Structures are given as structure tokens and as C-alpha cells.
Image (tube, rainbow, N blue to C red; front, side, top):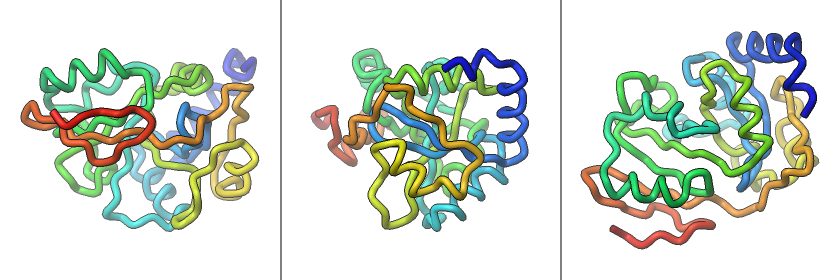
Length: 200
């Protein structure tokens, strides 16, 4: 991952993202595409390249939960316990969003999903991105199977994004994350994925 120690490369990458660029990258589950959360153009580009239904929100991912907290209004105690146990990991938690989260990221819903993937490459990527947070979804066109390898990511979205980063050996596991709604100190599992969670 020597590219991330190249200051010229890092500066160019951040400039592309600020201009609405979209990148593709490996996570611990499947491959994703992402842009800066405050780039409305970037978010629009993601919806266009995937032909994604505008009613389906993006989620926010980072290398650290601290970078995601400003986008969330409140974290109930039960959700805190899940985060301590499963972050980083294959768990997406949906909270009531704060005023810092743009409506265009969440499809104008009052909630936002956050996740901290357990993948060394993704962690290093977030560390060099301004703000350390990406608005993301899976690296595939609408109706396609989510990419689980670099080759599949290139085939799915390579012609539509600024960069498809190699995984440097830190491969995706191919299993979707568990998704749970965490509002009013209740945990409602919306999708059971790699991590099993009981309703709380």
C-alpha cells in the first residue's frame, strides 16, 4: 500500500473526491463504491452509475467510529454494547441522523446507517481521505450480484469510477453485513448477515 505514502497521489485522490469522484474498494464483507458524504455530486454519481433506486439510502463507513459519531443524533445503550462488541466488523447500525448528515445521502429519511469494516486496506484508505468517512454502497450495478473480488469489482464498475483499488491480499469474505435499526434503545434486526444478533 505504498501509494498511500505518496503525498502527490493522496492529494490528487482527495481532489478527485471533492470534485464528485467515486472510488471502489474492498471491505471485510463485499466490495464497495464510495464518495465523500458532503459531495452531492459524488452521491448523485453513485446513484447514476448503479442505476440505483433513489429511495435506497447510502451508508456511512469509516476506519473509526469516532469519525462517524457527528453524523448520528443519539446512540442508545444497547447499541453502544453492540458497537463495542462488533466494531470493527460486519455490522451496520441504523440511527437517527444528526443535522450533519445530508438528506441526499439518506434518501431524505431521518435515519443513517454506519459501519466500521474490519479490513486493513479499507482502514488505511480512510486514514488518508479528508474527513475519513465515505458514503457507500456495494460495487455492482442494480440487479447484479455484489462483487466479492477485485476482478468482479472491475467488471461491475471499473468503467464508472475514478479508481478501483487492489485489495493487497486483504480479501472480502463475500458475506453481507448484518443490518439493525437502533432507535429508542431497541434493536430491530432488518437483515441477518455474517454476525448473528437477537432482537433486543
